[in-house]
Length: 127
Image 1: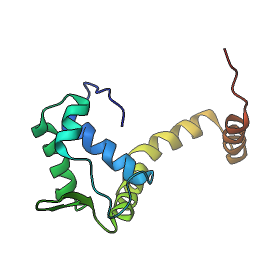
Image 2: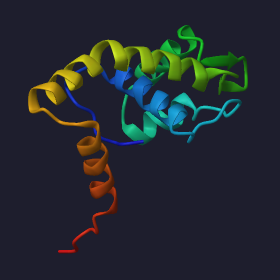
Image 3: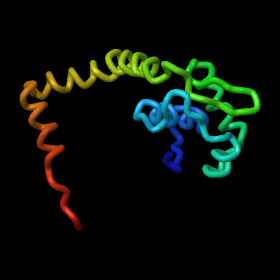
Image 4: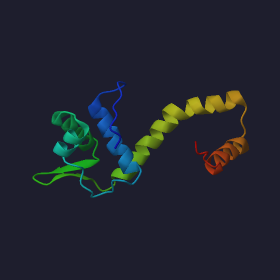
């Protein structure tokens, strides 16, 4: 996890979003334990209550379960649940802006695909 926080939203929300990204990226898998509240608080120099609040949001979202005395674990189906939500959010919030920009610039599907392919295959220049 990135150690930097930004001022755009509360730290507990950023922490929750980082765990969500780790689940979506496959870093955390269903059944895996979350790092302990104490460890995260110490590593990122935040209040343990802040970490707990971020974790509690994950519990409230049905992504994580708390097992008394054992910690918190990623629920079965968490990744699929997240994918559904993130896809809907993308299509409802981000895609309309992206689509409008594509239309405004007159880009074709071929140009979009070629641009992506060129960016991926472009060799990195060392400084």
